[in-house]
Amino acid sequence: MKSEYDFSKAEQGKFYHPDATFHYPIYLEPDVEEFVTKIAEDKKIEVQVLVNEWLRNNIKLIQSIE
Image 1 (cartoon, rainbow, N blue to C red):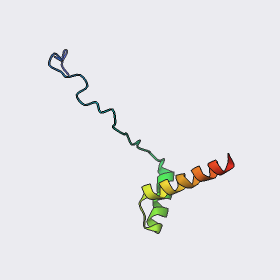
Image 2 (spheres, rainbow, N blue to C red):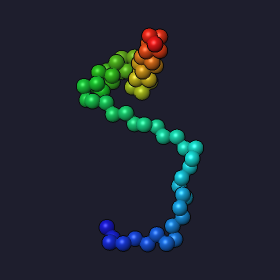
Image 3 (cartoon, one colour):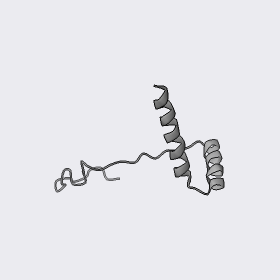
Image 4 (cartoon, rainbow, N blue to C red):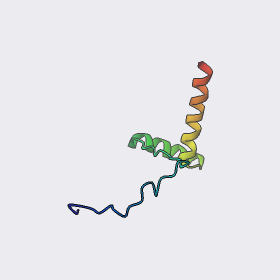
């Protein structure tokens, strides 16, 4: 790593996009990942689809109680 960098020709905000969306990565604990992967394989669907289904069902359940 250099001791100094020259930013005199840098352009501020060059890569900033105000409408950009960010998708948060979710990291599962190994035991949870193994369990979810097994069920997804049995259902022949992707883990992401299965987890989203479960989360949507939990959201509906929570909303029905409120």
